[in-house]
Image 1 (cartoon, each protein chain N blue to C red):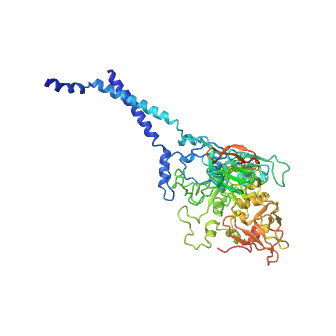
Image 2: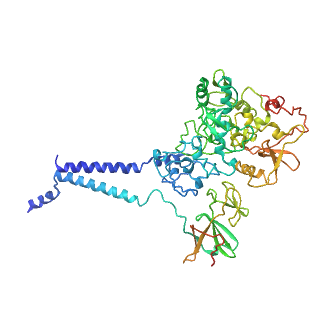
Length: 160
Length: 461
């Protein structure tokens, strides 16, 4: 009895050299395949992601008083609110793509001197086309959203 | 060999290979550049990672800033966020190893080299193809005398009997002007200088490959460092030719780089002097003879001199006289964009192409300088004032000096009191411009060359 008791664990841990090498070999292959799989999964998160221009949340409509024009850098739009409703002027100069700034009742592009009126019409400079307008809407949570990839006419307004 | 050995060797080999790939993936060159960027004392460290730029102009992602982190915007008119890198430089915008990223670039590191400038700076969307020829800068420069070197070539060939008259026939590279009508003294074409005469080969070897024109790289020596093409003038170098910006990939200790990655129209006299006032040309030896009063390297000769007068010693030929305005103002304050970069037509001699004279701003014994009123905010003069960073100097309705060829000198205007004031385009300093009219000047109205004015108006060294 005592002998059996002594021998038994010895028998379970004994692994032949052949088995040992085989296990390492298969283990290595498994690890290699696993690494390849992990590397493959990385392709789901590529180095380059083209940011989608929208939709971007703009907050509550009450934040924008009638007569205001507010630059929203996250969305890169000027959100306006006049008596007819809300509108979003895309802050991308139609000449080269720089961001026009609000300067003394004009939207002035710092790159090539294009100047737009506050409704986006070209006053002077290199730009030949008015600033584009983007679609805005009120979502279920009551907040305004903008989608810069969806262009609307200049006289379009969101009425609430 | 039995089967387990094979499995062991195969498994271990594949594992090692995978390990090597994983290690390499995590030790990419761009990571080293970003780490090096973070070590610079004057920067805010960034998180290590791939930097994607999506310029609004193209909407196409570019990864260039992953390595070139910290590189300066090339100009306020060309911010990377709007223009990106690839429009000008070409290359592969998505590659993260230098070899692939820099394949098929326009002109290596200099997309304004004249061999590629039409594909980078001069495309129809940019500085070519405009309805206003004045704005087609690359076309103009390709025809200009600093690019053709037509006058120099003609004079050398004529002197050595290679051609019967001093009229220009050849250029560094052939040019043709098909526009009609041509202004007075403009040429229709120039052929590429070949080897028709023995002197042609010497001229090419001794002069045209060594920095005498915009196609040619400069001598790689202190004082001479500069780029080629548009960047010859618009990309500033200091005398040591060292990069002093924050891009870790541009070596900071190897001469031959601009001060920072920046184009400017406010070109200081120091930039012009990388070519001009550097020595003389010996026709007898067919060689450029550098000035001997400047040390080959090290601190400037006049480092111990008082600031006043240093410029005259450091930058101007020991021979020759210079007026006060020539050593106080910057070269571009008189030599305008149209004069230096040309009007788009081909000329064969300096007197045919250059027209700004002392009398342009100072007038004559009988008349004040010619002036013209600025009528439109989109006029070239207004645009130039804004680009040079002095938009406040000029307004619609101002009267500015007009050259003999009708170009408006936006930087010299007449005040309401009738006085003339000039703003230095580089420093912004304003000067009152003295007039010949009503002065004690005894000029000969028929001789307006600078040499003539220098007889009385010169600065003593």
